[in-house]
Structures are given as structure tokens and as C-alpha cells.
Image (cartoon, rainbow, N blue to C red):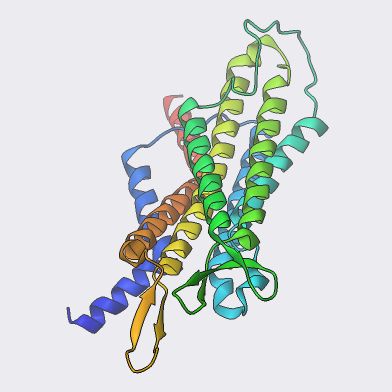
Length: 313
């Protein structure tokens, strides 16, 4: 492969299209390796799965718009929402699930006395919850650090940093784009907690339905956390990739007759930051694809089970 072909392949791989293609291949590999059942088939679960899937589509759409918008919008102040867009999609999904739990109370046919007090973590996978909190905390920390490093520009937008001795500056991830990310991250975590709390607090209809409904609630919680983790990873990945591009900014100065270049001082780690951002976005798309595909996998599992039962008769 010659240098031009390699450069084109690398650019395509690192592009949003490359992120989606690589993520799809990774997701397909995980599905083939781990053929898991996706839960029970109830009316409530159908709605919760649909809401989670639509939320995942909103997350993916928000990320795509945020990544592509700077290519068509100048200045970047007009796309202050680009890093927060995936978080907004997941927040809509979590809020929809919470409102569904409020508007559709359980009709109790037979009182069920809980063995232990149910909390918002009763049906939550602990590993997923820890993953979400770690990545969300990292996103907030990176945003605060970058915001403190940013400076207000001519128009008042805090998204520049000064480079070099002559007042040159470059565009960075600052408060202009960071504050929406902070607000949407807090909103996402709050709405996720609200949805998990309301669903866990719902009573069971009857004793015979406890096991099936518990599995359905655990599946709904897992789906919600899958969407939420995907949104956080996509937002964090886009932020880290953007920081990588900002760190690689250089300027040219010609005092007298001795031209020289100046940079941000972080240009040596810029390629690493861009690759890390790409990896995080691939991981985020994998989570989102899993959430989108879950209803179709459920239909496949249900059809296989029905065929197996019919064959045994």
C-alpha cells in the first residue's frame, strides 16, 4: 500500500463513518461470542425496550450531528451544543421511562410483601453502574479542567487559549461548550436515577409474577444504563478528540528576519489524544448499537423458543 492509499484509509477509519463501521464489527463479534437471552416478553417490557431503543437512536443522531456540525458551521460558537447532544438523547430516554412508570401504575391483584426493601439499585447491574459513574466523573473532570484553561474571546465566548508570546490564540474546549455538557450530564444522571427509583418502587401485581417482572425490570435497567453509558462515552470521546486537535494547533511568527513556529506545548500528545477519543467513540457506538438491536434480538429469541416448544409437542 503506497503512502497516499494508507493516508486515505487512515483518514476514513478515523472519520465518523469509520467509527460506526468499526463499532458495528466489534458489536457483531460480541453478539456472536456471547449469545445471551434478552429477557421476558411483557407489555411493560415492550414499551421500556422501545423507549430505550429510541433513546439510543437519539443518542447516535445527536453524536452524528455534533461531529458533523463544525464542518458546516462557522464560527464554532454556533455549535456550542455539539458535545452535549448525545447526553440530551439519553436524558430523553430516561425521562420517558420515568414518566411511563408514573403514568402506568401497577394493578395489584394479590398483595406481595417484599422480602427486602427495594431501592433504585435493586434491579441494577453493579458493574454497569460503576462504569457509568466512572466515565461520567471523568467527563465532568475533563470539562472543568478545560474550562479553567479557556479564555474569553472577542465575542465573549470562553473557548480560546492564548499561544505564543505575541498574543496568538487557538480554539479549545472551554466553558462555551463545557457548561452545556456539565448541565446535561447532571440532568442525565438525575433522570436515570429517577427512572430506576420509580421502576424499582412499583409494586408487583401478584406473587406468581414476581420472578418474571423482576427479570423484566432488571432488563429495563440494563438497557437504560447501556444507553446512558453509550451517551457518556460518545460525548467524552468527542471531547477528548477535540482536545487532541486543539493541542496540535501551531502558529507561525516572524519577528524580524527569524521565522519560527510555536505550539500549545502539548503537541507531542495530540495524536494520542485523538486516537483515545476515537477509541472512546467506538466504544460508545458499540453500546448504542447493542441498545438499538435488543428488541430484534428479543424477537429472534422469542421465535426460537416458540419453535422449540412446538417441536416438542
